[in-house]
Length: 241
Image 1 (tube, helix red, strand yellow):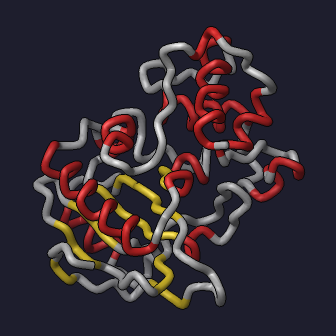
Image 2: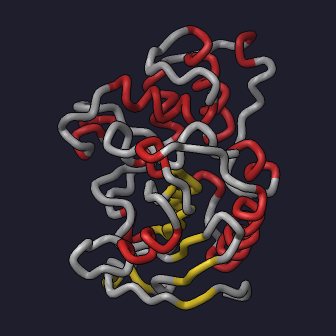
């Protein structure tokens, strides 16, 4: 990686699954009170959790696990048919207290650094736009990060991920919501044909809807599959198909 970051090596990593390419970026928030507590946790062997990079609020970046190793950040998860997301992804943690400790907007220097690192990684590993996700996308219900304050539209305008045109979302055929969600990458809880048997057994359909809304309609996160959400899902499916 060409961009500068500080080394703070975590012992929590392993080998990527044989034959697995890096095809995803997964964004997280730390959900801890500050950077030092997050670094301590991610570098604690007993915690058995890590990420490849951590970015502080001021944009300072820390390399915790080398790109070629499998960091432990995704957990039980699913996206577009992939179940071993730790093997297929780079995990990036953003210092933010999260919903438990006073969730707040991500500072500009932090997002600027995230954009720079993400652009570098996308270029280096040819990561497709469909593979840029948040933790809540791949583990709905179990995880809620990076949350509704994460600037998905802005980073998509920097060539990171996809953003649908929602301006005419209500004027076109919506199709079948769960087929559209599957086209985007989400699983349907309990439904094997939609990858839902691979989700946490406690995951509800409303958890998946909330995850979608937190990303694409962040001012309306209800978990309800209303008309507005169905049209937004259809608009997103068009750009992910």
